[in-house]
Image 1 (cartoon, rainbow, N blue to C red):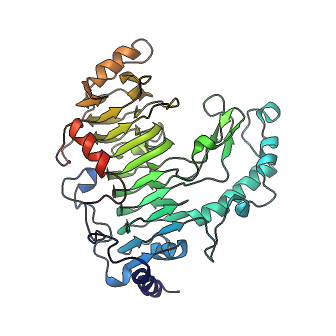
Image 2: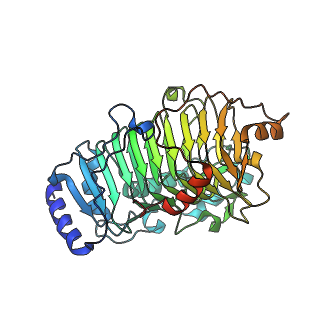
Image 3: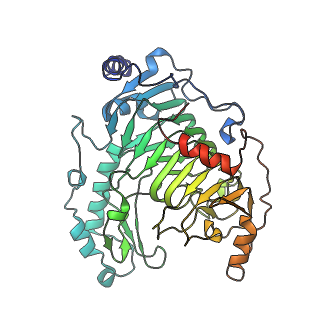
Length: 429
């Protein structure tokens, strides 16, 4: 069916199914304001705001969403998501579970038996069960990986949810994603990696949103979580947690000029990776990202972890609930990174100390000012250096750059209050 026909049909369905009061205003043609972070550099980020009427879609299921995305084409387009869309559905809209994707004799029981380190050893999995896992994973990826092309705006109407999907912004430019609840990018077929971290680990495949090789992207007022299948409920195999989720929002492979604002990251292990590898020297001079007015709640680590990039982290709210024994860190400082942190507020239980907020892997510098820790101002950098003296090299305060593209920077105290009530889907003023 031709896209414009789908658009007409979907538009009619949208008029029938979406209440007239679903949004206070039409945000679909909004563009990123001037000076609002790195994505405002140069010509800025306008998404699909110039789309003609024939390329404005209201989508209510996976098939309509995939058709509107048009295989990741660069045609200017606006896609409005209505209701709840489940990416794990077949051509008839029926839900698919992990058993429906499994093929070639794959089963978790057989996989565990085949690659048990006590008998298989430390070699990379290979053979019939690993081949079957890959074939099964490919079937799931075909359904849930949705390519987002250049000049695209995706917005959620009131209460819109996209679950089980991996929105992949690959080698694209000028993209806007707003006002959408993205949850549970669940991997049915994690792979065992015997040599990861010394003890081995399970590797998952999907982020809720993955920016790879893309630039000028604005992500605003989205909610990202594992809601539906929290990893804490998963079992342990080979002594390691059998994780089903990768990142919430990863920005890798030379992605550049990105603004992430007023969004909520919740109930997840590794939230955000900026820069995919310490050896990815092609990332030098790229990975320029602004994070402002975001909330990170019940996030174990990577909020964010940064390699190479010049990343401005300001006016964000971090909440570590009581009983969060798994908490590791918030700000990850890695190879050649330049994190410029300003006026961020942290609320933590008693077992989390100021120095725990930062973790360094081959990092050399971190600029920090205006940090609020459980209601008290602290100098994060000297505390971190003093705590880790003798075990890690000190971080300097000179990250080699000073942000110029930003909106008004509030105090951490003001930002803490504003973000608590304003971040996430459904909260655009």
